[in-house]
Length: 290
Image (cartoon, rainbow, N blue to C red):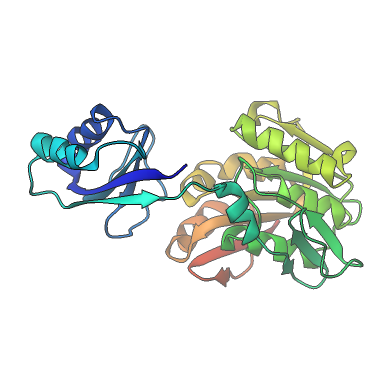
């Protein structure tokens, strides 16, 4: 069935009132988007940041009276807020996204492929993955940078810690490329479940342990990979360094180009760091434990 969406542009100060007006009018959901397309990547602890101007979209049943809906919203908010009403056709949004998700090559031998398509190169290392509830398919530059590094690394008989594992794609890729064992951790239970499921689908489940961060074993790893954000990476520097063996590798991603120096300063006490690798506006920082 089709849906109706009402799209409203408001100032930050009017957001709560506008959101409540949409809900009171019968909105099934309300989503927020920046009107000027400025991302919020790292909110401070306990902070819920909002942009100066927002676009609110309320989703309504198709049989709602759109004239009355518009009058109702304008009566509550006034006519100074631009709004429009559109019809939204119903579709399987996950399937539509998957239709655009194609096999991707990282480095020379690693491919990440959706399960519903045959791998382009059957003789390559083909990690079969479907988008799920957790972040990480390789489409984002931060994940891509890590996969490219893993493709060229000497992983044979190595142990790896994937800190902030998302879908588990990095740990699974490492195992398929020759690593002996990987531990994967995330604060999101859905990420842990997705990682376990994807490991099983790629026949490496017996070599992968998933766990919340508080359950990480007290041991040292040959490699520590963390694809999160710059703020948490700085806070975790001491902890991640602790998990890395002497002469072990650190791989850090989720970092914007202008955040490179902050990460370098945080990790230099423990690591000899390489020059950052850049993809679009994102970077990867790697190094060896001193």
